[in-house]
Image 1 (tube, rainbow, N blue to C red):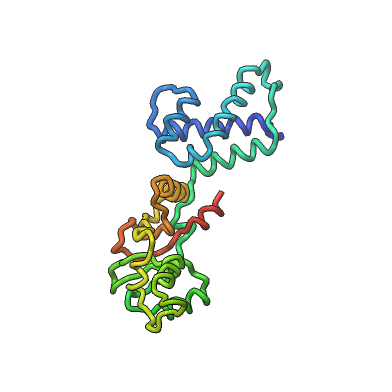
Image 2: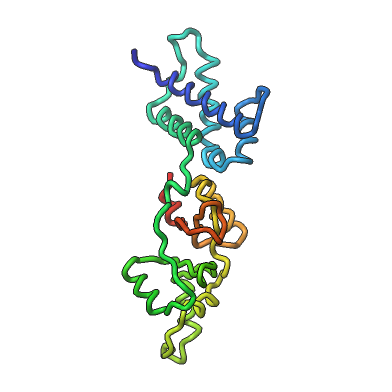
Length: 234
C-alpha cells in the first residue's frame, strides 16, 4: 500500500514538533509557532529553517482541520514539499558535526619558517590560511591578505625588500590579528555557520575555525573550516 504524501508530511512534522520540544525542554503543550519562537533561540538549525517550518505549520493545519474522512485530504502536499520536510527532520534529528565533515590533516608552520617556504606551499597546495606555531604553542593564523599587507608596507619605492621575512614578521600584518576561533569537533556544522555569521555582524570576520577535540588551543589541530567550506553546506 502506497503511503500518502499527507501521511509522510504529518509524520515528519510531528517528529520535528517533538525535536523542538526536546530542544527547549517543553513538558506541557505548546503551539507549533511558539515552539519555533522558543527553539530558534537555542538552535541555529531552527533559525535556518524557520520560514519553512512556519509554512509547514499552515499546511499541517489545512490537512488536519479540513479532513472530513481518513481518505479525504483537502491539501495533498507535493513530492518536493514532502522531501523537503523529511530532509529537515533528518537534519534536526542527526545534525552533522564539524569533526565528521572537516576532519583532515592540517599543515601548520613555525614562526621561524620563511615566507619563501610558505609561498611554495601556497603554489603547491593552494592553501589560503596557515596556522602558525612557536614550538607547540599556537601563535596565529596567516592569510594571503596578511602576506599582501606585508608586501605593501615593506616595499621601498617600487622594489621588494631584499631580506626574506619569516612568518613571525607576517603575523604582525594581519589586519585582524584574531581572525580565527578554536572550536570543538563535537559542534554541528550549523553552529559553525552561526559563528561565522555572528563574527561578521560584530565586525570581527573569522578567516577560519580551527578544530580540536574540545576547542582548546593547546590540543592537536585536527581540522579547519573556512567560510567557503560553509557556503557549500546545505
